[in-house]
Image (cartoon, rainbow, N blue to C red; front, side, top):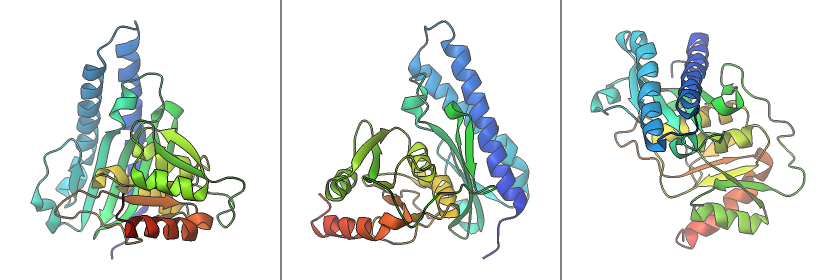
Length: 262
């Protein structure tokens, strides 16, 4: 498999940061007087971030790369390309539309032959970018101190997450976007992120690339490898986990799956 270049890693980080800055400026502008339409803010944020990223990636597309974006029109043409940029211009649209929430993100990733080899997750509300250009360092990967923490959706915790939390006797950490949840594990603010019930490739590609670069476990719920640039971009489940909790979490999830995943 061809390896990503240093330029690929740097570009992902820079574009995530620039899109995040655009979104922060838009949010500040629209909410300055306290009277704003959340739906209009979210729609404009999605569109403007998408347009910025697509314009910036145009030279790479001309050179032979392809793009899969949540906000773009998908085409099977991308399947003929080894290098595919997978982007989510605004992950956590609901949270973006609820200032001053910070649990939303921008995802920019590059998959090569289906592997998530390069990525950046911008957390604009926290003025932070986590990326494979400078992989984050997760301390004590072989030992998790204290009670485990399972990160879940604040509005609709998936069944797998509540099952894992119950069987680990874990503390629940509620958060918005998928990128923010994975970032919480990367930053040591949570230990396990199990997701079931529906996501797409753009929800997880960049976060998974960053998590793997940081030394965390990142797989499907059943332990299978996460693959990208598939004909159907639906990728409904995910486990990002501190290495020291991987075996226990996998055993618990296996039991959940054997029970029918209910």
